Picture 1 (cartoon, rainbow, N blue to C red):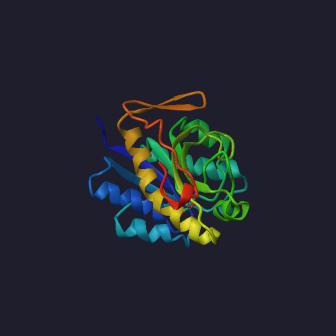
Picture 2 (picture 1 turned 90 degrees about the horizontal axis):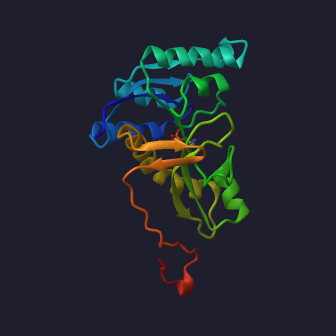
Length: 224
Ligand code: GRF
């Protein structure tokens, strides 16, 4: 059973992932509401998106605080004031403090544009293209105190094709991010996620254990 969970979104940039969550909520594919959008960047495009959809928003600028922990405390306060249950990081370009993580244990999600634990950090679409991997993708994970290290909830895989750059690969990955993040939030809202150590157990789900992707496919034909 899903219940309308209260989300707090943190974003620093354009906010296409936040938009996808908004779209899923508005089309009733996701039973949730974004109770507040927080950004560290007054110029972030995501603020306009939130405004268009009547979502409360607040810019909390790091420069206004002496220490990172103080900035994070202001963020925690803003989220708690709005009774936020689940925090979603969507292109939030700051590392959050241990205090922040502890304030929302296993209640902070992040989306990362690579198949973790490969390519943590930034500019990872370009790093994957340059490295020569045959597949990349995206990962939704719970946030722990490390960087991109928390328990993995869902991953989507995309092929890397000849001539791919960070931009072309990134666009292919982003398309899947827009599907994956709302799905992870939906599983959470339905109470179907349980964290056991590094593992996220998902109740009532089916895995096709025999599926296999090969890139490039044998003999130029699809292999599945
Ligand atoms: C996405 O690629 C996300 O995976 C990463 O930052 C980017 C944010 O894009 N963490 P957008 O602002 O949601 O369009």
